[in-house]
Image (cartoon, rainbow, N blue to C red; front, side, top):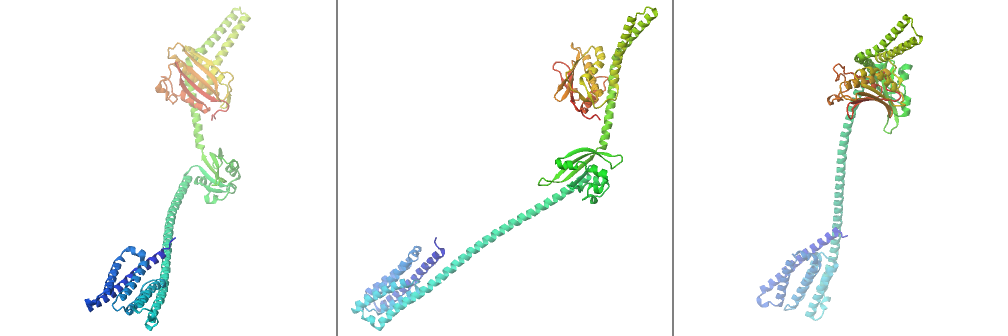
Length: 603
């Protein structure tokens, strides 16, 4: 790889060599002009070949000066400089040789001056100076030899002085070259050092700029991070304040404990209910704060929840008021970032008022159901009176016949026994009718008893048969075999069946369809028992279908509009559902399902 400093130094030396060569040309041309002018002053008659040589030398010097203004000459600086100096020696020697007197003293003086001048002016070393001096000495010796025929003059004092001058020019050229070389080397070293310093400065400036940019970027990132952290801190503080406000304004009891049962956090409702300030509660356990009974209730299921690692929900009473209040408690494990539990959380919601409202709603619903049953019995009263009147009339007739036979004295024991047996049958028949009515009207019942759906369906059909016959409607039961029992209130379930069957009978009674019947079918459907009551009535109008189970919606002039609403409520309280579908040909089918086994709580 080239050295830029060396290239710059070589270029500088070539430029200096060309400049000094131009100076030598000017000196030579000026000297030649001086000599040519002196010869012209002596007269035209004395002009000869020497004058011509001087004119040629002047012309060549002018041409050389013009040529050396071109840029390309710098590539040939050394050969041009040597050639010009050597040419000057040759032309000077030629001028001396062609002079009329062939004298060489002037030539020798000029050679000595030229040798000393080139030694001091030309920026070259001993080699170039030696070459030019050798050429000068050779042509000077040739001039002497042509003039004297020998070289004896060299041994004289003038010859020795000329030789000394030549040697002195060589020594001068050598010393000056050493000085220039050292100077150039110093300049080169200084230039290289300056370039190195500039490179270092540039590199340092780049590093400083880079570090400054890095610092500026780091400062910007730090500022952004500070702003982001400030925002995150503000958001965290706001979130904590919002959480604290939410916890303190919640009506639920909220607390957090560590694994040793010491409280980490409680809300204002906790303080209000248990009568303690949180600064006293935090860091202490239930045993430290409350009685043994209350501490046991508050710590209920803590160990189970931590062991299972999943939330648990349960209902419990807390004896902190008189009477005790009921709460739904949710306890859950608290986990850190690594997923390991570090504590336990608890939220307890007071449901005392809710349970009171539920109990009132249950009682109100039972009252409505009782009203519905009374209304149903009212609708069936005429048919029931007719059914009861039949066995009573039969009993009266059989009794009067037996009395008449006994008074006439013609009493036959077998005939009397047969009459009394008929009286008993008719009495039992009337009793069954009355028991069915009494079971439907009564307001009590066993809420969680096993219930045979087929038995209830048969009783409901028996209760509805008198009114169905009065309207010319057939009620038919299609019982599914081997049905498992359901758990519930049999009176309420029978009421649902009677309501649906009565609706079916009344729907069929208002139509003239040739097939006038209501079919009650029971079957098992998965984990439920399904009861379907199908009629051949006119069906449900589309405008009524969407609000069929809403309270006070009815299509009967004397209806209350509560039958289907209460029926659905009863079925849903038993954990089932009630719905209606349109039959493919005519009529409607009402379905309700009850789960097998434990039904919904009937509180």
